[in-house]
Image (cartoon, rainbow, N blue to C red; front, top):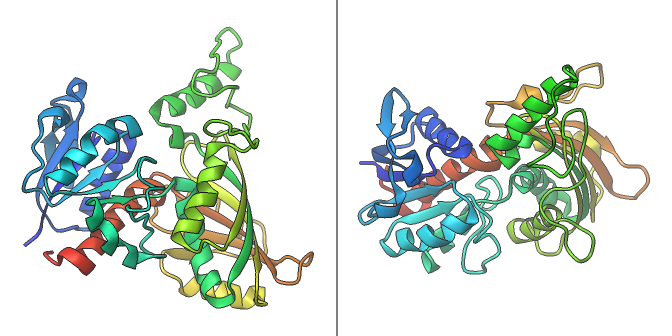
Length: 340
């Protein structure tokens, strides 16, 4: 016996990826509903070998459905998630709307799987920000061994984190560089993204940080440990898919790089590729389509007593969004619902 699963926002990048991953991981789906806005009504999406036509989210009745994977923006989620939750369907939400709600668990299954059991307060579970998700997978095994005091992270985030229009903007601006008669002014981003990097993701806050940077701080504290100090600089780079992060970690106990490498190799969801030679590390283009969070460049930071540096890369449409949502559904099934 399996589950009745609805994918909300099934025609978007993340929604389609959710459908792919549900099929790839053979999640026990008895019945599937692909939901989208009215303007996408009837659009066909693939689920394994099957094709489904999208149904109208606005008129859909969630009564009797077990799980809804939401991949729509916060505004639409605010309208439809409570409707689904009230009907008894457990919402796994990819937007930022509920991440900081104390009554909604924020879950990365490799890090805090037990947190799914708190879903019942609102019948909603939140999926973290893409940049946070991959980082906390790397932090958790180190924190368990040596207790992390402080994290300094710089991100190199791909344009797919901003959606299809951003990917199109990068593509069109790149072509325009080679054809001077074309002009593609920035629309999605405040500056040209092709052949450039932009140290600005989301809106600016009063203290000079951006909301993306604030998200990494707040979410790491909620998911891993509220005592960890985090400072972040988030940068958009001209890469289509795959986020990279340079992470500096200060721990309370000494942890040498060899032991850290061994701990990370054994940790769930992590693949360590760390050879001190040309190409002995993973870059974003190599992680696309993979489930793993890749860790490279593990080394001691000699400027502090207990410091480590590492390089972290992951497919942001997978671990940063769709994969993590499906893993939450799997964890919910294994720990709570137990139907599949």
